[in-house]
Image 1 (cartoon, rainbow, N blue to C red):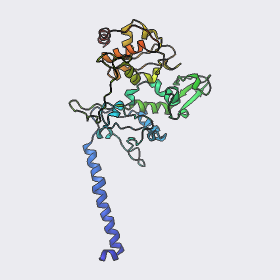
Image 2 (tube, rainbow, N blue to C red; image 1 turned 120 degrees about the vertical axis):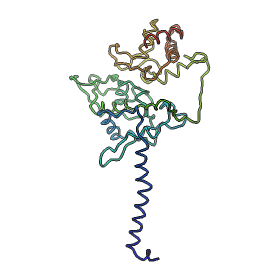
Image 3 (cartoon, rainbow, N blue to C red; image 1 turned 60 degrees about the horizontal axis):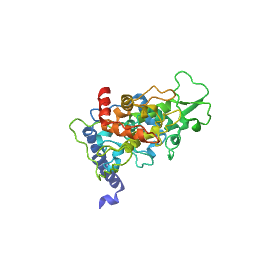
Length: 331
């Protein structure tokens, strides 16, 4: 054929064919997807600090160990209320002229998925301590300590954000640990990671490979036919107050022997669990864990009775009726 003996004709034919394929296989479908997939109605844009924190997240290679995609697999239920959909990533834009869109979906989970970490762990104090020294909160953690995002100071100055790190994890026990602007921006980004609710009336994609396991009705904190308090505590409370209930000195108060936990003021206990607390000297504020996680009275009741009977606590179990009365009163 003439084309094979004419290098100019061969070159231009190949170039035009490549351009045709690029246009129809890559460019036009991408433009179509941009029109079809729009952010969900209730999706919130990143704040200025959260947007800067996203760049710090990228800069430090966090995507190498953490995903931001909840798969349809049942094991991913712990990471979100539903599997991720295309609309969850529709609001992502190019970082700049030279860097493409960063969805940060990831490919490996050396650490847990972060799709809804802002809901699963809303405690700002927890994130700062964990960023400074992960093993202060999770003994078996293999996450590196990002201590270069913090400063050590002899004296606190106006505007400094002190991180209450236990002395045993400080380089110099006498110094204060202060979060830099970069640390604050990174935490702002992590706390912004929440799954946007689907529009009313839209059913989410179901998780597949369902494997619902239930402990026997004799398990600690379990009530026949009700939620298991030990499992709920592990999911929602243990990251701060620890599996031992002893908390973390200078950061999170102990529940073992706590007068609130073993006391008779049920309304106070329910209020703290649902709305948080900021009155404990030497400790940071507790976020509204129950409200954020949509605790029902049954969930509050199960966690409460588990805590009242665990770690050597020997308080009398409370009734579901008393919890419901307190729950309804504070709402």
